[in-house]
Image 1 (spheres, rainbow, N blue to C red):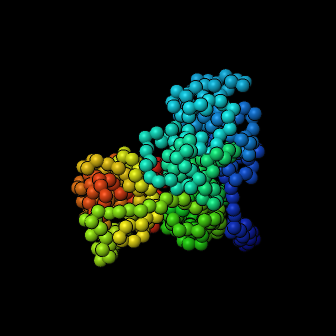
Image 2: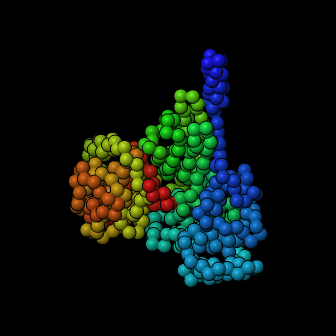
Image 3: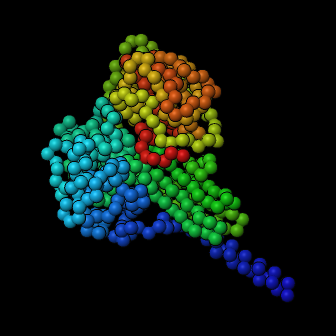
Length: 464
C-alpha cells in the first residue's frame, strides 16, 4: 500500500513539474475598464491611468481609443492626474464646464482656445502638459525637431517635454505639431508624465505570482527603463535585454538605453525558475529615435587649454574609476533638479568646438549664479570630489544599482569622498571652472559607464 502511494506521488510530482516547466507568457491579469481597448497598443497606459483615477470614463461610456481627443477630455484627465479640486460636474453636454473653468483659472489654456469640443493637436497637448506639470522649468536650448519653429504655439513646451522623454516624436524624428491626437495617443503622453506608461507581463503559478513591469513602454535613445520584478521567494531569476544579461538588486533594475541604440523593438525577458518549474515572461519595448540639436561652441583661450589630449585621458580615467564603484542599494527615485536655473543646454547635443573638434554633450547645463548652492538630486555616496581638466571641480555621487550623477564646473565642495548625502543636501556651489564659458552647472547621469539623460529621472511617481 505504501509502495503504491509513493508511486502515485512520484507520478503526480513528475506531471506537475512537466506542466510548470512549460514556458509561460502572460499579460496584465486585471481586465481593462474599457472593452474596446482589448488588444490595443495603448491598453497598458490607459489602464494605468484608470487605476490612478485619472480617467473616470468618457461621456459616451466607451473609450474609443482611435477617436479624436477633445480639449474637454484632455483638461478633465489633466485635472484628475494633477490632483486639482474641481466641483462636481453637471450632467449632459455641460460635463466639461467645471474642468474648463479650472484650467482657465490655472492658466493652462492658450489664449483664444476655450471650446471643450475643440480637437487637441500635438502642440496644444504639449502646452497644457507643460503648464500643468512643469510650470517652473525653463528651457533655453535650441530646438531638436526641425518642423517645430518659433512660430509654433509653444515651441519651448514641445522641446521641454521632448527632453523629459514625454514627447517622443514620430519614427522619422519629426513632431508634426499641427497633427491632431487620438484619445490613445493623448493618454499615453499623460501616462508618461505621471511615470505610469508601463508594460506588464505576469503569470499566476501554484507558488505565487510572477510579474515583470517595465516603465516606460516606449523609450527614447539616451533614456532608461525601470524594471520591477516580482517572483516567489525560492525562485532564481535572470533578466535579459535584447539577449544581454542585466544585473538587478532586490526587485528592481534600471537599464540604460544608449544614445546610439538602434531604434526599433527590443525584447525584455525574465527567466525565472525553482527546482520544479520554470517560466519565461516577455515584454517588447520600442526604442524611439532621439532628436537632438547641433551647436557650435567657441571656448575662451583659458578654457581651450583644458582640452589637451593628455589631460582629457587622465580625466576619463578618474571618472571611470569612480563609475566602477559598486553598491547593493537601490536608487531612490525620482530625482530633483540640483539647481532651479534655466536649462541652457540639453543632453545629446552634437557639438563642434571651434579650434578643437567635434563632441557630444553628455549632460544638461543649468544656469546658476556664481556661488549658488548645488543640491544632491537623490541620496547617495560621494565617490569622486576632485578638480578635473575640462569638467573643472567635479563631484560624482553613487545612488546604487549602477546609477551615478556628476556635478561639474563647481567653484567649491561641501563634501568629501566617502560621505553619505541625502536628497536636496547642498553638496557644492555653482562655478565656472574647467572648459566653461560662464557660471553654470553641468549635470550628468550615468548607468554604469553609459551616459543617459538626467531629465528623464525627474518625471513619474516611483519613489522607492
